[in-house]
Length: 228
Image (tube, rainbow, N blue to C red; front, side):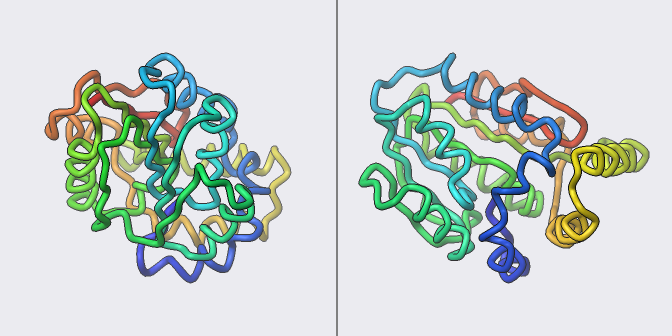
């Protein structure tokens, strides 16, 4: 989860305990990440994948990809140095993993990459920056490459958005997340700039990405993808 500039201190502060709460704060955790991984498995057209993880945070999504594709070479980009410190500890010096402390909104994406992934990160960008990033992703993908974004999205009107917030709170409390942890999550979420599924799919199509789709959605959590 890559923060925007104003939220970097909050994410640096919470980096060490970030992963421990993921299942509690993402009630649909298994289906959410599982769908993203299944999309990759269904597409897989390279034996040794070249992967870019945008807003990689502690490397949680990268670790899941590596578990299924152990020969992958993955480059992690995140604006929070403390988050990437956690990723470095996770991967323990693996030569298959490289790192860059950078804001994905204006970072040089390099490439071409077979696969570009992101999880719970791009929603920190304003709409114009999302559109710009999607264009950069299209340009950085190899021909036939895949972009998978496991994301937090906005309801299409205020009533739907209120329902998302209400349902999420009920679910995480049922999962045993403490009120203190919920308060910290709300502080991080105050920096969110979520956009609707419909808008993001259109912005992705506008870049020239093909087979653009929303393969999974549960309230505010959705998995979006497109092909280069």
